[in-house]
Image 1 (cartoon, rainbow, N blue to C red):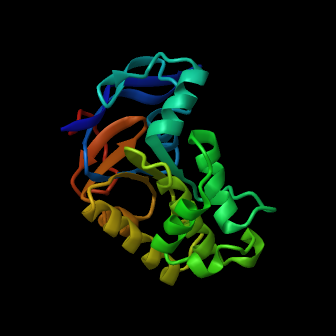
Image 2: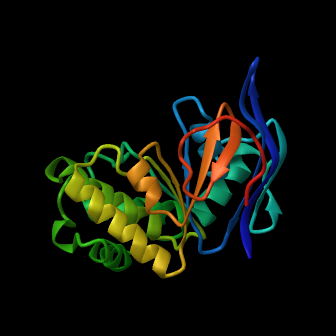
Amino acid sequence: MSLLELKDVSKIYGDLHALDHVNITIDQGEWVAIMGPSGSGKSTAMNIIGCMDNPTSGEVLLDGQDISKLSRKELTEIRRDKIGLIFQQFHLISYLTAVENVMVAQYYHSLPDEAEAMEALERVGLADRAKHLPSQLSGGEQQRVCVARALINHPEIILADEPTGNLDEQNERIVLDLFRQLHNEGTTLVVVTHDAEVGATAQRVITLEYGKVTSENGDISFGKGSGAIR
């Protein structure tokens, strides 16, 4: 069952076609990596999938709803209710503890619930670090707080942008193991990355180059070409 569809989507900035007639379908429960070299359109695709931007043309269907022409306020509501975001730079609030950072996501969604936030931290192995500030956590621990924050509102899709980009090898393995667990539980994961090892852990790889889809299913050579993908 399709959860997300990009139909003939383009994003144009002046003379630059950041995305050029892209077609992507992602099924519920899939773990998909979107890869490509710098300037390939990965970040633009993430912004559109994550309801942070509108395409210039084409349709974006999330759970059957066309979100391509919604206002910024409407996109914010969709993002709040249906998408869990994980960023390379963490974006934790420096003066809030780990559990409070998780509760911030609850605040914007419904009502903060410390017990539920603690359960989310326990799930990522950080219950004993709940009262620590971000400055008191390692990079890997901060990223796991981000995973807990993304999960707290039970989103339909987890969207991660270079989630291991600032992590050492050990913490990269911890985060990828969390993703494997989520995938096994039926969570839909979309990971935007330039790291071939991270991409190789996904169920399916979509490669972009010059704003076009060029390959899938693990071929990450960034070759030339275009086409649709499912």
